[in-house]
Image (tube, rainbow, N blue to C red):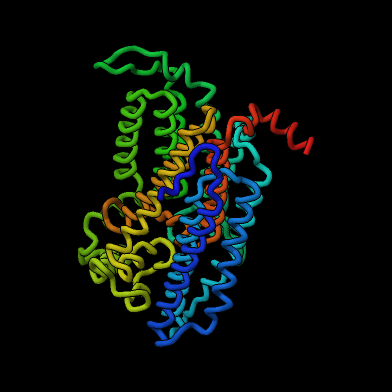
Length: 459
C-alpha cells in the first residue's frame, strides 16, 4: 500500500507505524553494537529504548496536533537517521573507552536531539502558515548575512576550528551560525524571487537560442557569487560557499525557468573555482589532497584523514564488517566530517546506499510538497530547502568518497554537532509546514496570512 497522503487525508496512523518501525531499527542497531563489544544485550536497553520511543512518539503527537495533513513519511525518515546517528556516535565513544582520550559524545548528542525537537515543535507552533515568512524577506536577509559574517569578524581564537573560520567559540560553548544563516537566506531568496520573477523571466535578448538576461538583472547572481567568494576567502569555508551559491542559482532557475541563469551560474562557478585554486592556499591544498591522497608527501599529514577513510570504506566492501566490528575510530573526526566513512565501513556499500535512499526520500517528499502548494513563495521555499539539503549531502559524501575535494560539511541528522542537528530539525519543521498546506482541503486552508491570523485570534 502506498504511504503517500492524498489531498485531504491525514495519514497520521501511517506515520505512527513508520515512526515505531524507525525506533525498532534504532534499537536493533544499538543492540548490535553492544553485542559486538560485550557479547550480551546492553544493560540500559529497556530504559534507553523506552526513552527514545517516548521522544519519537511525542514528536509524532506534536505533528498530529500542529500539522495534521503533513507528509507521513518525512518524520519517520528523520527519526531513523537521527537514531542511527546516535548509535554510530555511541559506537565511536565505545572505541575510545580504553584510551587516554575517551569521549562521551552520544549523551550530549541526545541532549542536542531533545533541543532540536523542541525547536521543531516551536517552529510548527509559531509558524502556522509558511506564507507568514514572506513578510520577513529582507529581515531574513539581514539576519542571515549578519550570522554569516560574525565568525569572520571575531579573532581566530574564537572562530577557527581545523582551518575553517566558521564558529563562534567562547570557553566550552561553540556554535556554527552559518547553519541557521543558510535557512534565513533561503527564506530571503524565495521572497525576493517571487517579487522579481517577472523581470528576471521575461526581460532579455536572444543569444545562441537562449534568452540572456539584461546586464542590470545580473546583479543578484553577481552579488551571490561575490558573497560566496568572500566567505571562502575570509573564512576558508569551501562547503558553505558552494552551498550558498548553488542554492541561489537553482532557486533562480526554478523561479524563471530560464536555462541562461544556469549557464551563467556554471560559468561564474568555474571562474570562481579556478581563481580560488590559484590564489587561495587553503583551497589549493584541498585540491592537491583530493588529487594525490596517497602521495608520500601528504599521506602522513594533510591527507591522512582522507586516506584512512578510503581504507575503511574498502575494508567494509559491499556488506560491511558489522556494527561495532570495524575500526572507524582510526579515521580522525569519524563522528563528524567522516561519519559517512563509518557507515560505509561497518554497514558496507549496501548500508550506505540504504541511508542515501532515505535521504533521497526526504528530498523527493520535500519537492513534492513544494509542487503541491498553491502559492509561489511556498513552492520556491520548499524547493530551496529540499535542494539545499540534497546539495549538502552530495558535497559531504562526495568529499568522503573522493568524488570531489573535502569541504568540511556535516551529514544532516547523522553527524555529531548541535548546530547541524538543530538546524536540520528546523528545516524539517518548515518542510512539514509546507507539506501540511499542500495537502489541506481547500475549505480548511486560509487564503492569506492575514486571514490565518484572524482565525487564530477567534480560536
